[in-house]
Amino acid sequence: MDDKNLMQDILLLEKGVCDLYMHGSIESSTGNVHQAFKTALNNSLCMQDALYDQMSAKGWYTTQQVEQTKIDNVKQKFNMQ
Image 1: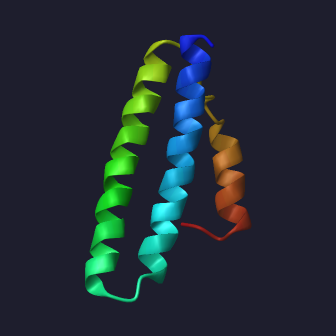
Image 2 (image 1 turned 60 degrees about the vertical axis):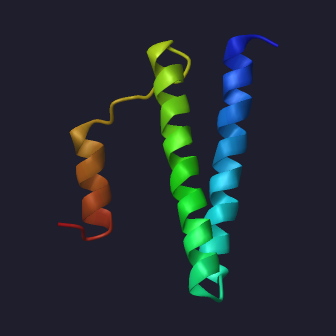
Image 3 (image 1 turned 90 degrees about the vertical axis):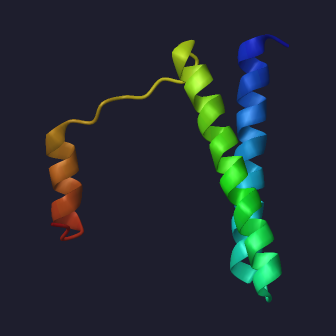
């Protein structure tokens, strides 16, 4: 497995972990449990951001610029200001 595929796999796993921590935080019944999940979620989001930055710097995770007209159309569709 090359570095690009390894980073993609790690990023996907990290996204899954974030989802689990988010639901754990939402569903927690006590303040201590909520805070533990919230802290874990924040740490995972930071790791996810770092992974994205590394992948983007290497050209392994590219994004596309959206035309302003498309943004305006979505805003109009959902009556957003």
